[in-house]
Structures are given as structure tokens and as C-alpha cells.
Length: 450
Ligand SMILES: [Zn+2]
Image 1 (cartoon, protein in one colour):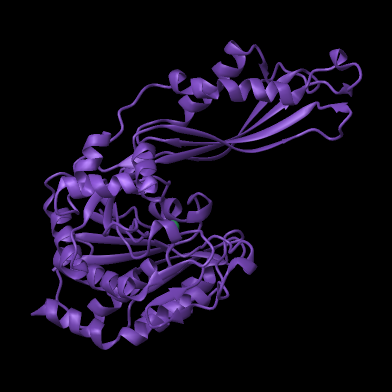
Image 2: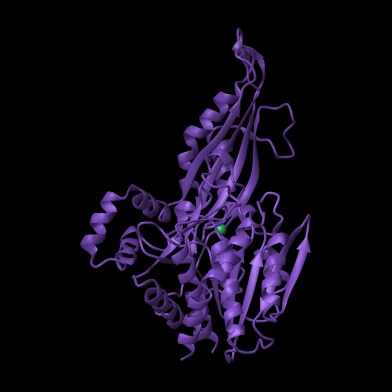
């Protein structure tokens, strides 16, 4: 049977696959600045050795996206595998036990390095799955398209969004898998059906500076900011209310599918503050004040204060309505002019709103009873020998471009690694998890396009 052929091929080549993953981790693609072209070239070389056609689309300084196809037929079912090549910078290297670019293998069980989880393991596994289908010369009626992208960690406009708008427009995509890590320790593997969006704004209060001995002459910009901060919670009332894709009870039900029964799940939930916090995040719009700067000297009334607000949107919430809500809060409730308005002069008492990052959430609405999704879940459970479950992702992701742009609503995330290790020092992936994901990607692709 073809399935056995695929599994045997993976068992036979484990070491080669681990080495390929190590090579990708050792290739610097910290973003910023990016340097994803380094990784794209490695992938292209690897695919070339099997005669798989791929194209690199360079941009900027040593940056690039890559697209590869199993064959030249796009008239059957098209399956898209998407994975990002960039990784977040390592932060303070002293916190790392093994150098972030070392791809150190510990006890044949763990692989350490920046991107081990997010998401060079998922990306490598997708590349390998494509190569396996080609090497085994398996007969298929559809096509597997691999899109290795840049820029995910800094918004995705030059990566997934650019590829969809410029290179993937001429054929229909029937199903998409994004290889982001979907482990939530200590739970088994999840399949993500959607994700939250993210809006970051920088607020700047402009007051009037004066000597601290006669403060009445000035306008303290830090006090202005503190008034805004106190009101921030009210923003929720100023934006259209929206139902989360799943209620807390629905989420609990989805999660408890991975456990023998609901009682066992409730017991675990009660002991896991992290999990409780995720459930709360998945059902609410959240606002967090994350950075604040103000003041220059202990005897000077400050004329400027800056704050960054990180807001996480439920699928369906619009960036525009969040900004309008903020303006209303600052203008109508607190009576301050908005600095970016053309009427305001630069030395007026005012508040500036600068949009630093924006991505909307997304969700695959018709997931229930979808036969393809069920087939994928069955393969995951068979390979991992554990029940899996559906969920939505608390952080933002490239999936929004694929779903919201109308390219392919049937988009899910599934991949090796655990969310808690992503972006952290000593990031790692379990080697078994990585090898399992190759099996899942290869078997699912075969089943979908055969
Ligand atoms: Zn990622």
C-alpha cells in the first residue's frame, strides 16, 4: 500500500531529515532584518536533488519567498502547504544553554535552536513531505503546492499576502495547511481553525512643559496619559460587540475531546492556570498597556508621554472600529484633540494615535462535518497515537490573509512544536514530534490529491 511505502521511506531516512532541519535552523533568518533568502536557497537545493521545480522571488535586502510544485497539473485538487522561513531574533544569548544557531541535538530526543518550534520544524517537514511524494513517484490527480514565505514575524505583507496576490492567483486552492506549532503542553496536538487579530497603537500625549515648582503653568503629559489608561477598559463598549467563534463551554467541549471524559478534562483545567488563561483570551477582545515612556528630569513637568497598547481582536472585529473607538474615548470622554487631525497645531495640548501593527483575526466557519478535516484529524491521531482536538489560536498568524482574502476559507494550522516554546530562549522541538509531522503532511497530501 502507498501509505506503507510513505511511512517506510520516513523511517528509513530519519537521520537525513533531522540533518535537513538542523541545516535550516543553522541558517540565519532572524527577522528583523529577515535574510529569508538564505533559507529559500537551502530549500531550493534540497528540492532540486529530487527534480522538483521551485521558484525564488527575491525582494529587499537578501529577502525572498519561494513556491514549489509537485507537478504541472493545476486542474485537479490543489493542496497548499504554507510555512514561514523567518524567525524572531534570539534575544539575550546568555539565556541560551546552547547557541540559538547550533541546532544542538540532546539525547537523540530534543533539538534546540531559534526556530526549532516556530517554525523551521514545520517548514522542513512540509518540504520533506513534498520530496517524498516526488521521490516515491506516487501517482496523483491533484497537486501539492509549497509556499515558503518571508515576513511572517513582522506582519506578513511581503510574505504570504504578497504571494497570494501575485503568484498564487491563477488557480484555486482547495485546502491549506499552515505548519505553525500547534502543541499546547501538556495537551495532545491541536488543529487550529482560526486565530485572533492584533492591533498595536502608539499613543503620544502632548502637554506643556514648565518648572515643577509652578506646575499650574503647564500641562502634565504623564497625567494626561494616566487619564487615558484609566478609561481604556471602556473601549470595549465603543466597538461593535461580536460573538467569539466559540463560547467558553464550546471550547471546553472541544478540548475535552482529547481526554477520556469531561471530568478528567475539568480536573486538568483546574490545575492549569495557563490553559484557563488561554480559554479566557480566546473568548474576549483584550487590551494591554505594554510600554510607557515619559518625563525627562525630576523637576520638569513633562510635555510628552508615549504608551504602546497591544489589542487582540476576535475574528470579525475590524481595525477601523478599534481606532474609531479610541478616538471617541480620547475626544468625547476626555476632551482632548487628536494630534493627527489637520486642525491641531503641533504645540497644542493633544493626543497622537499611531497605528504600529494591524492584522485582523479569521476563522473557518464551515469546519464542522468537513470530510477533509476529519481525514486529517484521523491521520494525526493515528500517527501521534493520541486524540487531537480543534481550537483557535490566541496569537495572530498568516492564515488571516488566506481566509479573509477569499483564497481558501478551508485553512487550518497544524505543526510540530509547542506554542510555549515559540519565541522563548532555549526554544526546542521534540524530534519524535518533527518526524511524526512529516508522516502527517505526507500521508494527508497523498490522501487529498491521489
Ligand atoms: Zn510562527
